[in-house]
Length: 308
Image (tube, rainbow, N blue to C red; front, top):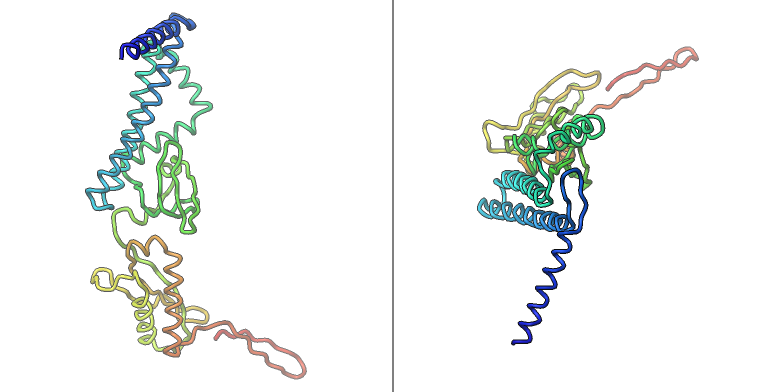
């Protein structure tokens, strides 16, 4: 036991001597002495802050998701966790620079110079960072929302990071969109504050078709597709006659979709068209298509365009 204690004391003295040498070694920048020990301390603080920020973010998300049964409070938890991570980083950076021996009050002049540099070279980076903070704070965009951007990108929001937002399309393709595009551009949020949305399905039938049967076919097709709301009087399925086309009576089938179907509009529209074609065929309702009649007179060929 006595030998072990002696070994520990010798090791501690050796570490103390090493740390004293590291504290003495360094360089001077202006009036500030930067030592090797200070740099090591800064690196240790950065590593601890990185680990603590990740652990805090994970813990907040787990606690909030567990209390809500796994769902509704997750966007709030994500926002709080991300802002907590950024706060920890800022505090750790401040403490680390102070431990390095730097006087933060002298950074005012440097900050002005950096502002000029940011204005010329880092404008987009800073803009995306601030836009990301805005998105997290005002909650106009939440994790799990189904959005459509002015650029044509459409998908589910999976992550809001410092520089960009990750959008996953229904083809499971991840698209990284700069945060500033959500703040400066037009964004359609299909799941902002409602659990359902209306989808319009245009179709046409031949002139002379029974409109009552067309309506019946449309309602039957909508009822056969899972995810189309049926029992909500405020969101009922309907069939409208919207115009008289060159060769068809133009109708619209209006359906209300639940949240899951709302996130897959193209697939849902395809299913409704499939069911609608079956229902129209059952009732012998013709879907028109262009036709041409040929007439031969006195050895010449005359073509008349006729729309059926």
